[in-house]
Picture 1 (cartoon, rainbow, N blue to C red):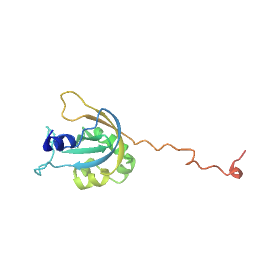
Picture 2 (cartoon, rainbow, N blue to C red):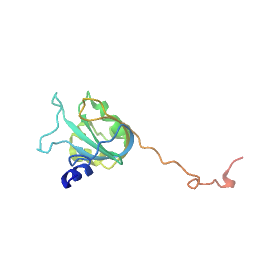
Picture 3 (tube, rainbow, N blue to C red):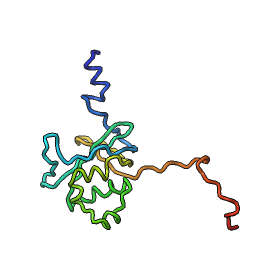
Length: 155
């Protein structure tokens, strides 16, 4: 092989990161983008605002488009819950779906947050289907456990 073909092969293909394979992965939300490279906003076919959410894990990265409309808000809810945001607290603070149309706000809330995704590549689709879940809690090892004080045990 030559220099350029080796470089392409080592890059994961065409200079892009490798896609997450099918399965469940621990990931970090890496990007929250409201605009394309040319500066125009992402919009659905119906004209609703959209966001491109990029997640990265050890096995690669994947992207998910989310439509920011009342009818499609149910698609953003699992993302918010997966990163540990309380829907009740968001309601109490008066945070609405429209707040997530602001790229800076969405970035502040989500980028850098960890969660898990189940990734499923569907034939004919450009992007894989992602199902967002809360990150696994670390397993407690015997060395991490705190032994109770024998005087504090009531029996």
